[in-house]
Image 1 (cartoon, rainbow, N blue to C red):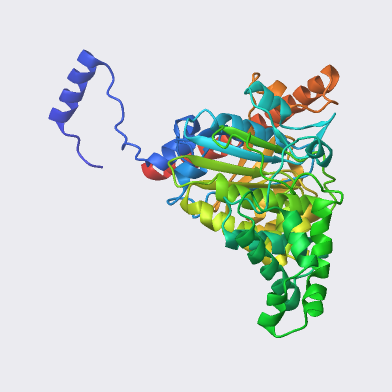
Image 2 (cartoon, rainbow, N blue to C red):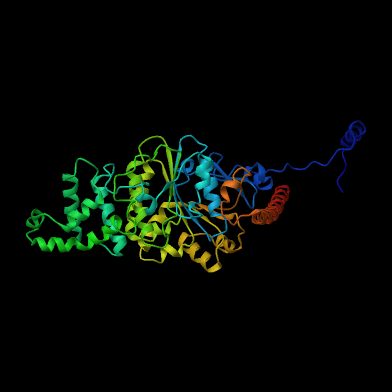
Length: 475
């Protein structure tokens, strides 16, 4: 047994008498910043930074969730475009509307919305536009015939190349196939003749139709063919364009562009709710609006622009329209454009005739937000988008207002928060009576409680991990 040092014993006794009992000395606990943030989650910085638009909060950590494609572009995002997926009734519309309202608080932001849904004769965005003192641009064949809004595919603001590409797209969408060489030649010749000879006013579609039906002799001689052959080549093209002139879409595109469209407005809403969303008219309409905006609205200035399209499967699911928008997305990236596509089911676009074009557009969308889906749809979505397994498994269990966010590989479960000021503008459905509003509030409260429970479980697991780390450090 070792001998005790008498002097050390006397020192300890004297020290205890003066200062009380001497505690056993332990090694200090050493931990990293990441471990500390895991224990005290509210102190951790937001996962995507602290600059941008507040979306809500992360379900598991409780941290605020802030997102802005313009702030993240270049460092965390290779492209500023965004895809929103999910079945109806889970919160897609509420997310889009609050996102736009919050973006508009920045003075350098402009937003265009293609509003393809609505009831009672107005689109879903009518209340928001009205609250901001704006009037939606209502594209409606009946209204157009009575002096309503017109968009001219041959607007001089659009380049000649853009005009010809747009005309081809309109025809190909309506025909469901690509133009053959002969029909394409007839269209090209008619277009060139019209833009060269009609100088006292804006050329319009009626001019193209007239020239296709009555081609010039010079056109036939240039190809060393008979004039009747040139007329036959352009007949199908003329019949398709005639639908925009005298058919069910007449009035909207067969005249000069309306001069009362304010392209400097912070929010521009195109109300497409009067067009049958399941008809061939919708993708034609979106193609014309998209190309017109590309040449008139997107300008090389310091503004950041958001182009939000509801029912976007009309764009992605058509190979001809998708090709036009691919160029718009690539072009817009250099000029501060964020394209937001809202789609119900990914299977609507990846299994169709435009699978190649759809894949190209989806690849440009570095941000993906997925609301609740059925299990089989969630698995298909996860496979296409490359989501982690845990995210795929949780998608079918998501409650309204909660979604999986994938921002270039940074995957989080996020609870979208809506303020009391925003709520009357967001829930615009006529069915939202006082009872249904209360029901929605109850659902949100249930989702909030579930989120709290998940967050508490997550915190408990992190605390246990931190305690284990501390014990290991002492050992």
